Length: 384
Ligand SMILES: O=C(O)CCC(=O)C(=O)O
View 1 (cartoon, rainbow, N blue to C red):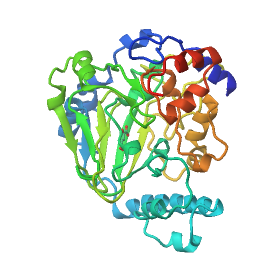
View 2: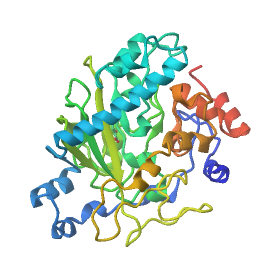
View 3: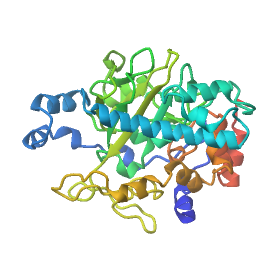
View 4: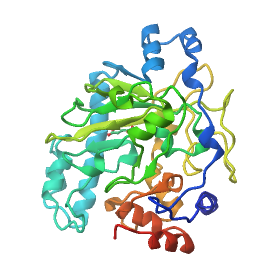
């Protein structure tokens, strides 16, 4: 793990110039265009559950909402998992003396209220300027809290979170609302057709009080050849049970939750392994074709070519129990001791984009950089 982290850190250039606290080297991958979004005919030739119209919509718009994908039983199971995770969290807060009551009382609170009630009831959680708490979004289960900056995800392409060598891969997202997602509680918004050019636009790190990458509509317009980018912005409300599919070059965000309840969702991703168009192998010891996340946690094969996915695979449980947040923070050497309660998020995407803004997440990341780089970045601070 250490050598992987060292190799990734070799990307870092310590230059502070106008507007950038830490500038990243340009990479030949910035000129690479994805092509998976161009092969409509090939997609139409395949058989599957989607209609030809659906497939065509996906190619034209870059996203597709499919209604009623999850039935009641599946939703209940997902919500049960979210409930169990929150009860586990309540258990650690109780053990730390940061919550009043009993575990039975907390367990009995409905799944979609529990986190809010914990937020209200928490005792003695220090530091957070606004005193709020969020579940860790990098677990791909998102509790988007009411009026909460850190769960408001700005315009970005998912490619901005992956290594540039993967920017022409279709790492494909299914966004799954566990409650109805509306403009009021922070549904998703997409720039229609922004996937089409196949290009990954410039992003910066990290907006406001967050760990997120961010692009601007001005850059989207200029770099993707979409002068009407702002007019293409499309809110996509979705009901619990629907699924929105989109690819890694799709520009999207989730808007503010202006309601009073949590907007729960999961986002899950798939990609092809091997075959034509497979990515160049990672230049790190031990990196193989399943290494799609900085050498930190491999992808899990769930179906061999031509086979269908077998549900309930035991391998899935073992794989899922490796906490990606923990490995990504261990990879950067930013892991805090009391990780369960640590609200700070860092990740390897911070090695890729120019650092333009600092906050507690970026500060933790900067503290992990080699001393000379850190000194240069600290010297360039304008927002202390
Ligand atoms: O769920 C959200 O609020 C944002 C999700 C997102 O941006 C993503 O899944 O890429």
